[in-house]
Image (cartoon, rainbow over all chains, first blue to last red; front, side, top):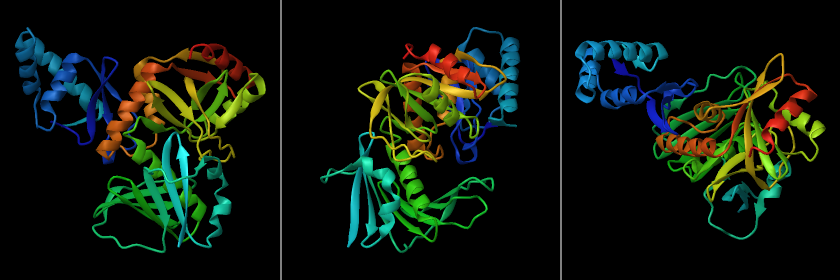
Length: 89
Length: 291
């Protein structure tokens, strides 16, 4: 999967949000808020193709978690991004 | 020989030039309160011309307006941008403006609706050129009370102007500053709201400014209730009511910086309301004194 063109991660008052800024996103009014670990994942996969496994590996690299737990969290994050329309399968 | 006037809106200077003998000035009285004399350096200039050459036209943002909405289509061209304007979606293009890549110089040619084209060309240039300068153009109605500006936001038809009128009628000391497109600029760390020459259908062109007291999003509901927004919702609210094409990175970066600074400094509210006197009373009770 891949982050769609024109979505940018921004920080405001300690919150992370993704907002649409590209040509196709001019009318995109919805914002997706993210916690620190989701923002970390976003920053590391921006502009690249990635899989749930890649996300899980990024989580185990940074946080002290088992691969199973990381995979489960990564699946949830990916599903949320796809549902929000900011990532394409 | 063109005739040029220089204007100052929220401390930013810009100029408009019409050809000699053009009597369109008579229809541009909304700018007169903002005229400045002298020859300060302008941020941008707009010149009316008979036509212009361009090359390399490519789609950037094509509006898909409803029949009754205005059309603004944007293209990239060699050296800058091309804007095509019309008052209504179903109508042929009324005017074309070619703009330098840094939005400092626009040239406009019109076939119809000249005043509409001039107003929109200047609003577009202003929003784009000042985006990186702590300045945002807001689609809002704004009243002043006790020396502070209160902005009412909302989708078209939710009753921004109606709510301002309810303040004028019910809340002593209220006056209208602008009914459609005020400007917020952060001056010495303080967000201030400025009157502009752009006020929608209400002729209200006031060259004054006030610290922002609060920003209120109007939401039509079967009752009147107000609550304070979290900063993240406040951001979403103000960002979606700010002018400027997000597809241009310098504009998107500037908008983000200004909108986030504003919502961190002034309170934002969501007002569920009917279009009734009580709505203004409920709203003013909460927001005056919180600024």
